[in-house]
Image (cartoon, rainbow, N blue to C red; front, side, top):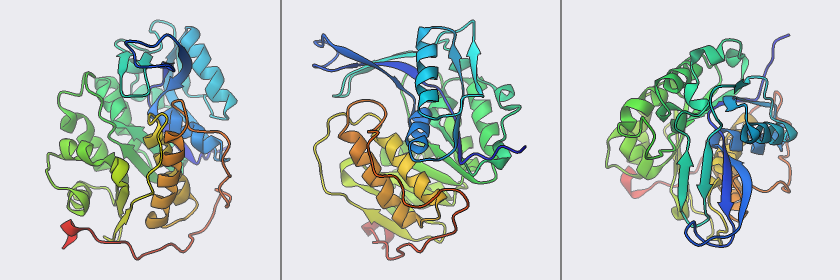
Length: 322
């Protein structure tokens, strides 16, 4: 029987210890959770009834067992999340005001390679997701990420998600450029995309420069300034949500990605998917932890074989589109 998933995601997830009463220098209380851009998105989509699977490696240790139990409990399929008996699960120590420290050198996920994809039904998946983090973990994970996208036939999404200190972070263009060339949707921060493609352009001009590398759809996340998308027809759509108080912004970008991809999978136009992504990201920023809140209204439509829905096409045009 052919396995058809709504989303397959490839990447590392670490045990995350989050300071709850101050920054990393002064905090005395920490909460244990897990953090990984791809698995965060998987959890958000699984909570909405989509069929998702996460492809990775975890150590044969308490951290790995804990992550596996939690993701499985959320409904994420883990049949391609292998246990590595020789390497540990990565660890992230962070606070809610920007302090973060990683222990991921030599982690189980850093040993990912194309062979980890041998029996994964990539070609049948409706959507794929990988981030630049995977490509920057090392040569093996980069080769796996490249092969992952090259085999896709549906939506092929990448979030650059630059992280300094990783082996490939010294040359992000070399690490992430091949993924952008093989994807159909880019979901990236404005400053990240400038670095990856070596451009000082902003807004629509930057999105078009990214699109010239291969993707047909470019979403630019701008933090407090909102988000925008260049659609496959060349339309430029901007959205600036009302400001709200943030409790813990970590994971908000992953929630945005989940909302955007969920909307596109149900047939929404990019301009409407932008609104869904922004709403999901905003809710996640107002929630403590790497994964957004569980209690949200479910998406209205079924995600299985839903036809296109009519979306707005009157996107606003920025100054850089004049």
